[in-house]
Length: 412
Image (cartoon, rainbow, N blue to C red; front, side):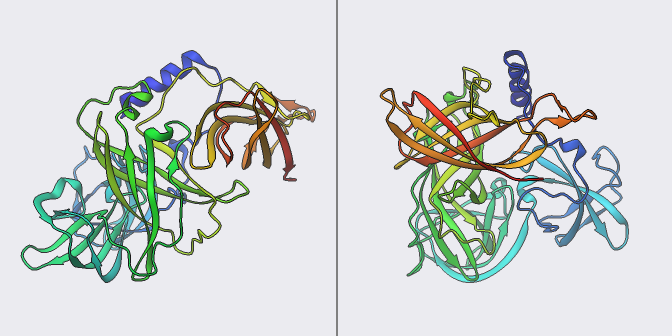
């Protein structure tokens, strides 16, 4: 994973001088945790502790499975499921200590106590991890779920009771919906990079006890493994990303991480059973997309470097790729704010064909960092580039012209 990242960075450095704003993980503040992560997590196995985030040091003690309070978080892969993280925790007897966890083992246990019906043959696991598969499988039947392990890495598992193996775990099982559940219709989710080569189908809501889940099917075509010009071999690999729910105004309602495993280079599908953040209302959802996906897309040509702008010169924009879904289009763009300072921008993009007929529109609401202001009250340099997802009605895939309009900008 790190080699792929280094190759991408080197290649982009050669081809373009565009500087994108990004977070520096080495400078993360102690009170900042990754998106969706609670300050209290549940350890699933006995875990070694260290005085510093370095496992070459001798571990003075270990913790049995229990809840722990997270004080600081230093990560290598932003909770991607194939990475690990160092977390500083508070203990009652050794004070502040560090632990190292696979990102899929960072999460919370939620009690459920509910009977569910399996919709397909389902593998059993001794623990909440793919590595603990024991070869046993349950045919479609009713089972009693005791609790769920929910990770912000998108990995979710469910502990059940069995009469012959005791307590076992299911990893994102396919469940039959209860009467009255899953009636909210959602179209298939696609990404601006892959289109039909990678999508999430059959998205529906399921109510399990007091927790709402999203059940869906992640489908990857063989061509997705080659679309980004990177070879992934033929081993089983993590596939992951975010399901992003949008309203009609182009605002994000919520984004939910997902992750599972599929053999690289082949077509395949896996079930997803994802916890909906508490209090989230999806009733105004207009579109659903896939963002920050793996396999990575790394294509040519390079972004067009801001060849578009609004008539007042408040933003510059370079359109990358566009894909067409079920009555909508989704695209990726590089956008630069030209107004000094940090502001919220509300944008409308209109797409035209060769006859100047409107193909569709996209609205976007995003935060952009413009040029700084020097001592002489003159802007210094240019604003940061921001990579954004654009979404809206219509089919823009064959657009010939784009009109950019800034509807409003927040005031400092």
